[in-house]
Length: 373
Image 1: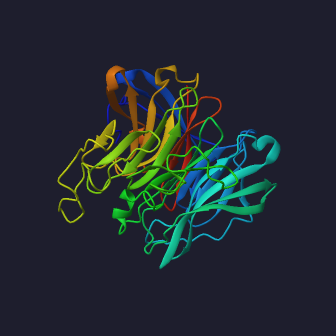
Image 2: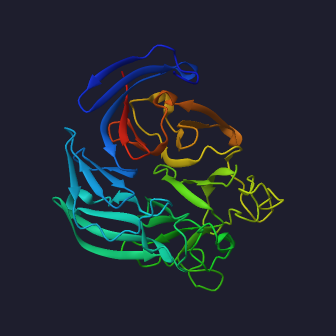
């Protein structure tokens, strides 16, 4: 059954490796076609488009795959050892090509490293040569290390100045560490691509915080996007029972977790009785109950002018994409997209041609392209 405010009639046909849905989101006159371009992926997590139009996709179990423009899939060798926990969240997370990938072949991987009793969100740089990663070098790893395979963060994004942002989770049982600027749990960190720490980071002198920390007070941030035009950085993170947030990041700011939150603990108890504090940033959007946000994009592209400048949030629990239109005075208007997929959305990316890639979660996950009719 088709849900939400979509038109009631959809055409379903087979094409290549997948299916096509065509539909109209009538409230915003958005007409599109959904085409499955790869399926039977094992818990896919992060996606990146390469300059030749091929795609890199991570699977949480530790595989990196390349999908060519004809739909062929190639497994990439040389991925660093990944801590994977089927009954947790540990695994291979994001993949990000360097801005000069066309000449250098450099990519960055975020992943869980270690074992159940001692693990950390880690970032490695490598060179993709054919079907193999070479020159694999770890450039960042979270300290302190933690127990339990939960709350890693693991998203990557470049700032306009070429430095690299990394999100880290607070490790679930270590949530107080999110408020400690000297710990790297529950943070965004900013580093150079060789792992060096920029001298203009908020705590670069190490006195009031770890030199790599850029922002703090985060829970489990699985969405990170940078507006290349304005330099604005948007991040979303999971709350517990409610309290998922979208934030605009400002270097050095405290985003509150767990001192302030709109969510409740899984037991039903308060995490905190407070939802705001003068020294802590407020989200531009939050959800109660949770939608479980994962994957994030800022739409820039000519294929869907109706979406220009909008934020697209993947929703695991809600099984759709949430469109956030940013208006004057901080006004945010929200609507649902692509509910007819009835799938947990793990990642959202805007392609070079203006189409949109959606990654669906699960043991038989898929990549779906959203294109104009």
